[in-house]
Structures are given as structure tokens and as C-alpha cells.
Amino acid sequence: MILNAIAEKLKRQSKDYFKGRHFEAWLIVQAVTWYLRYPLSYRDLEEMFEERGFEVDHSTINRSVLSYAPMIEKRLRQFRRPHCESVRIDETYVKIRGKWRYLYRAIDKHGNPVDFLLSAKRDLEAAKRFFRKTLKDQPLLSPNKICTDGANTFPSAIKASVEDGLLQPDPVHYVTKHLQQGIESDHFRVKKNMPKIGGFQSFNTARRTIAGFEAMLWLRKVFGFSGGWTINDQDDASSDLQRLTKHENSIVQGIAAASVEVCDEPADSPFSEVVLSKNGVDLARFFFDDTLRPGACEAIDRLDAAGLETLIVSGDRQTVVDNTAHALGIERALGSLTPKQKVEECQRLNGEGRRVLMVGDGINHAPALAAAHVSMAPATASDIGRQAADLVFFNDRLEAVPEAIAVARRSANLIRQNFALAIGYNVLAVPIAIAGLATPLIAAVAMSTSSIIVVTNALRPNAFGKRRDMHTRGRAGRSAEVKAS
Image (tube, rainbow, N blue to C red; front, side, top):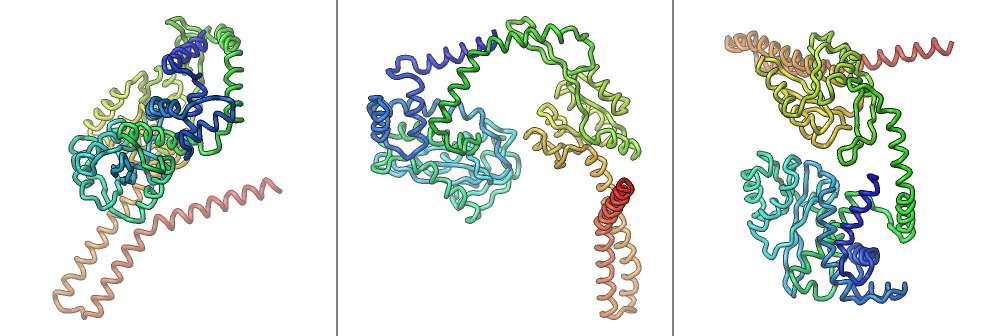
């Protein structure tokens, strides 16, 4: 069965990882994680295992840490949470064989670790290597705000990263001492576990061990394991895994039995479809009915009333897209589109002289969001989708789309009105001033009056929104009184 195959694959991989080791895998992992997470020496761990009935030499624990710490860091790196757009970069000192070396580190403004690099020198090449290592895995999520200390190597390294395409053009680089306090205090979380006397004995040992320290920091801060991970918690997790292993066959059999009931759905069904298969054989076929977002129908009605044409571009099957379009009252809907085809559709509409507003929330929508004239995404969208969108609305209701269009149109009208007021004032006032008919006092009052008129006119949308909210609350209160009566 599928779960059995997954379990067997994990067992084979774990056997390869721990092949030839004297101790069992759980004991090795326990020793490595204890050393990387807490400020313990190898002899401390030797005594701790001896108290628990295991005779483990401190040199054996050392070899295990050097072997498995980089492996843990490599496995956790691909599951890191994407950072925000603002990062802090700094370097700290690490003693190796009696000499000070440099550890480059980066965190985002929320304190989440981003990346690290151990370097023998503190120069321009080291800064460039650090930027390449940090940005090569996440080129689409490159930061647009970078805070560093006053080292003269960072501006050149940032410029080189922009030229290599790792950073977006014109990133904001600022040197602010109080913002660097966050990363300077964060260095303690890594350095507290380092050897207290003599430091590391080789550069390779330091590099491998620090990779494990940073991995444990990712596990605690980025993955949310900030609480105590006690022995009881580990025992509970182990027992849960054992129960899952015992019941996995019955689970898969239940899925196969359920597939008999749902596989009779026709191929052109207006539902989203997910197929569970093994070795090319379909085991189960699931159909899901898509639920419209709150306020979707009202938003489409308001867009139609504003004279705007609506269009659906989706990667779902055409029958699913047609069903959604019918529910929303949209005449034109395109289904089975790839992300590239969505971009081509936006470019085609732009070529016709239309201004495209794209609204999406998925990863596949990101290219189209970037290609549209303007784009919007909800706060619940994927990280890449929010990065590609021009506007992000902080609720699930699509009524924010026509509201944003209405606000933009009112703002454009006010801008045109202000230009007309300014031009009209100058047309009237400048000839009077040239003719010498206006005293300096009158000119000052007229200038102040024109500024007040323009500012007051610009504040009208705010006053309009407050009056509308009061009107809405008044109607809600009256309706509540009617229901109570």
C-alpha cells in the first residue's frame, strides 16, 4: 500500500544514513540534537548518557555531531519559511585555533533567521559569497530593504548582487545602529553553545558545528518549535508514530473502499478532481465543490455596474470554470490555462489598449499578477502571490476590489479638480499681481486661501467615507430596532 511504501522508503534512507554506526539511530540523533540545542560539552553528554545506562564516549558524540549536523541543516534548509522584505546583516567573531574568524549572519525584521556563512576573512569577496549563498535559493523573494553595519564591503557586495540578478534593482540599503541591535543580540543564540575554552580546533569542525547550531535555531524560531521538547513529548510522538504504523493498512483499505463510491462521477463533472494512484493505477478519485469567497457575487455586480468587463482565467478544467462563471454571472471564462498562458492573455489584453486588473491568490497566479497593469491579492494568498501583487486587502471578501477601484476613481477626480483650481487661481491672480493691484497682504491671504481650498478638496473622500459609515450604522440600528419590536 502507499503508506507502507513511504514508510519503507524512509526506513531504507535512515538505514543508509546510520549504516555502520555502533549505536542505534535514535540515540545518535538524541545526542546530536542535545549538543546543538543546549550549551553542553561532549563530556557533559557522556555523563548524561552514563546516568541513563548508556556507555558513550565523548569522542563518539563528537564524530556524530560532525557527521549529522550538516545533514540536519541541509534537510531543514529546503523547508524554511520565506523571509519578509527587510533583512538585517551583520558579522560576529568566532575563535578557531586561537585566531578570530568571521561568521556572517542575516535575520529578517521579525527576528527569523535567514542564512549564515563562516569566512576566514572579512573582505569584499566574503560579503559577495554570503549574498550569493543567501539569495541563490530564493531569487523571487529577494529583500528590497537591507540594513547593515558601517563596513565598506556591503555597498559593493549589494551592487554586485544586483548586477548578477540576485537582488531586485535599486534595493534600499541603510546603516542604522538601533536596527542592528536585533541581530547583534541574536548572535548570542548561536555563540552560547560554542566551546568556552580554546574555541574550535579546525575550520571544518567550526563550519559543520555552526551549521547544526543554525539548524536548531531554524527549528525553534522559523518552524515554531519554541517550547520545551521534553523526553515525554518525544515518547508521545514515538507512540503516535507506532499507532499510525499499525493502522496504516486499514486507513488505505478504507480509502480504496471509499473510491468505489466516488469513482462513478462522470469525467465532465463540474467539480475539482484529485486522483490517488499507485504505479499508474488509480486507487481513488475525489471530487470537490468549489466555494465562492464571501461577497463575490456582490463584487461582480458592482464591477458590471461600473462598466468594467470581468473575465476568469484559471488552470482548472473548463467545466469547473464554466460552473463558477455561471454562478457569478460572468460571460467569458477560460480554463485549463498554464501560468504562461495566463501571462499571454494579460499581454494580449494590454496590446488591445485595455488596462488589466488581475486578482489572484495562488502560486500559479504570480506571473499573471506581475504581468497585469495592476494586481490585487488577499492577505491569505501565497507568499509569492502577495509579493507579486500591487495591492493586498486584509479580508476574504472580494468587495474590496470594486471599493479599491471606486477610491482610485474618486482620487483621480480630486487630482484633476485640484489641478483645475490651481490653474484657475493662477489665471486670475497672476495678472492682478503683475498689474500691481494686489498688496503683499492680499497676495499672502490669497495664496493661503488657495492652499486651504486644495487641501480641503483633497480631504473630501475621507469625510465621505465617514458619512457613509455613519449612514450604514444608522440603517443597521434602525433595522435592529424593527426586529426587536
